[in-house]
Length: 431
Image (tube, rainbow, N blue to C red; front, side, top):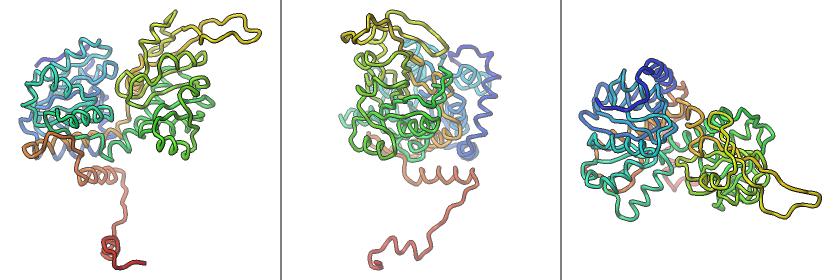
């Protein structure tokens, strides 16, 4: 079996971590038990590009229980838990190609390694495998039954591909499932992003001016969690409705240009490029902390920061201080000179919750990976009739996942009476 992990001797530690995560993933555990009996993925080859974490390992074990043959690589160079990667290879005999800190060249070697596996299906976290199958390896696309995508960023890329008429196979947008984006994106990203910032800096959030760029589901979750820690939260947006929502939710709203001069902590959560650019760095005050919780490391223009920096110091694990010239404005009255100011960048501008912490808690990934599992099952059963477009998971699957999650929490809900159903489905009864 081919694989590339940092050290297989870490396998025992990784196995313990995987088993610990499983305790918080009852929905996936139930699906694994069902898959082990029915084998719905028998002989199916799946290439997965995901964050190699303990939670992802439990997804891999579920797919394997269903009969699938797997190959896994990392969707981010800094998100791999090396002991988990080793455990998947050593204890569970699943080929893994992932090393924490791998450079861009190795990252793409690993993407190609899982595609060398000649899969029938891909499972993506950012659409990098799909991108390769539409560029360098497009001949291989004819062998793909379908793919599933877990991120907002990836779904945006794939919908663009479908709109252009160039998508070569069907894709299930798992990210668009309610049991994914309303929980993973909001509660998972909110908690794990704050966790990453605190681990990297050990600062007190209370009283800090905390700038959240983007008020999508991830931004909503982050803004609420930061407020819960006592931060003064300011939201920047380009969408009028979302900006209004943020204000109605009790957050201050302003442009990034305005926020730059007063913010203590800046976190991008937009999925777009250069949200924090050179002119924003120049306006930031001394000691500003900058992080990104979007999937790709493009939201912060790190290249521009590198270019203007006069000095660069690794002050803590996952925290680098850039000393840059102050904003080129005339000196104020009585001001003789200005020294260099510090900008502190967390985790190279990469996904802060996975690069500086351990990612989302297992309890929320339970639902996200239940969606990925269901998507694989759905593609296996329906690929012959699916068109080359981006689909959402059927609503009944989403409801099924929510039902299992509530059952695992010991929660029962009300049901409609026959009279109530009739009232809601008719117009004759009126008031």
